[in-house]
Length: 126
Image (cartoon, rainbow, N blue to C red; front, side, top):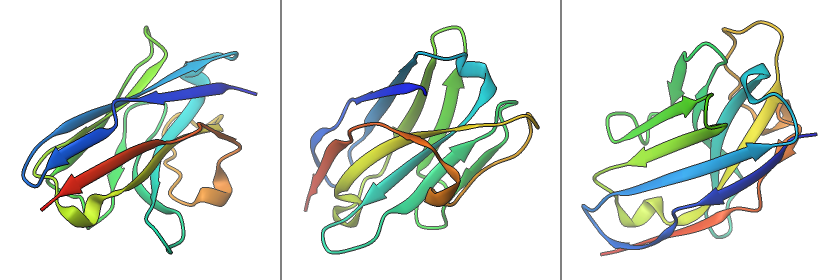
């Protein structure tokens, strides 16, 4: 099991930026595909962005062009750079890890992930 701790959430005005970080420990980080998910009030958890072990990325249509996922295996950390934030981006953001043997595979469903962080709140005011 890998332990995940998110940070970087907060309150920002519409149009602003935030950078989320997710620090991993307990296992070899480079063996895991990673993802960022969010859960808005009253809604199901949804994928935001995902990254394979080799650095291939996926972004949901709702955030494409505004959010960027990246990873630093030397620091055991995955990031989510969020620009041009909108009020509808308000949610609790979670990072997740999926053990992966393929190196190139991207996982976009919450059911594909075994390990989750505790979440960090992002609030975008209009």
